[in-house]
Length: 119
Image (cartoon, rainbow, N blue to C red):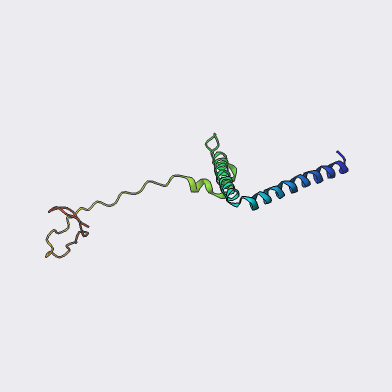
């Protein structure tokens, strides 16, 4: 393809694009509500597609992280959180009698049976 034909093709494409943009502008002026609803719907669909492409790209079938994840560290950010360590078990029972030093008042609105462990 010669430079002249390439330039003509590019010019034709630019003219078609300009006409299409003019039609879209005119439609937006005539029916702004429909235009905005269409733009919002288009944005939602594009967001779904983008998210799907990113998810497909970040989950290769080999089980290894994609190259861009290794470079950015997103593979480590997506790894599952380590299991929580269990809370320590109380070995001593807190005094139940409020007159006893060290008594811990249970939270308001709760009923604590006598002899139960409170913190």
